[in-house]
Image (tube, rainbow, N blue to C red; front, side, top):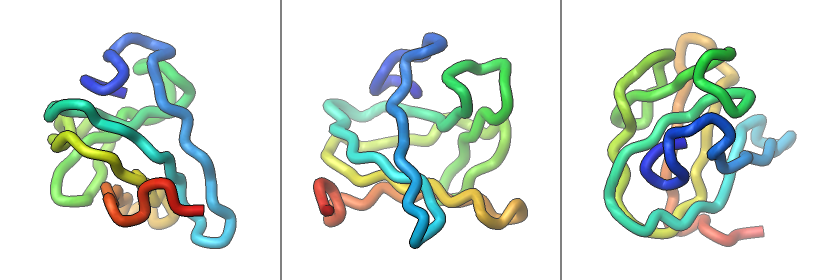
Length: 95
C-alpha cells in the first residue's frame, strides 16, 4: 500500500504465497518514484504495518522508497528477527 495504490484502507495489492520458498510475492508495475509499506488484512489498525530500508522490514518502519519500474516484490517473514523485502526486476512476470 502506498503511493502505488493509495494509502486508504482496502487499497492494496494482494500478495501470493510460495510454499516452496516460504515467502510472499506479487508482480507490480510502479509508474513513478514514491514510497510504500506492507500491511496485513487491508487496514492500518490491524496486525502489521511494515516499512524499512535496505531490504529490512520493521513494524511501524518508515515508508520504503521505490523507483518506477516493473518488479516482482518478495516479502519474507519466516524469521521474526529478520523480516526482509526485495524488488526484483529480473523476476517480474516469471512463472
